[in-house]
Image (cartoon, rainbow, N blue to C red; front, top):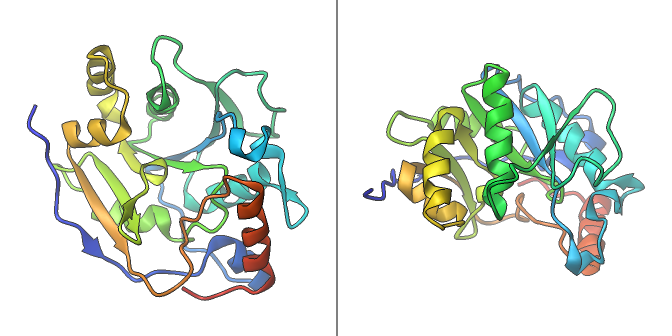
Length: 230
């Protein structure tokens, strides 16, 4: 299959979600055709394990991610490697990785099946360790979606952030074929089915910053203590 890529478009960046909450900003309206899948199945080895439960400003990272997810659409589910991996969250479904698929595709496959069963055409994936995602992430990506781009990926500082992608839920069969070929890269899947890129311009703290290490957690605490507008 020939890789397909739609040219990127730059969009205005927005205040980071955590700072919005602290400053009382009202989020944009939900995108009704989007389900939100919070990725929380990683082992978090660089953090010393248990990343979803690590505290940021006194709150677990997973709790911060769920609060942000509620601004991006609905319904919401949490993707985990095993159903006993983390404690259940009130009112949120827990979805285990697809067992016959390896790597990050396992979580994506399970999430797409869940979102499609909920009658949603799109699934927004968000990691549990990205506390500063733009409040308008879903609506910006949704506006960029088109028939020849079945995935819309945000980009910042020259990097694609596939963990924060907007995925058409009908790509499940293509994902299965791709996985059966022995490939496991999310980038490769995006190239196989066609993707577009939404670019957040530079000049401000990165809204797609990931908390991967204890040092990153210190940086995130600093950003909350001295919030910036992006």
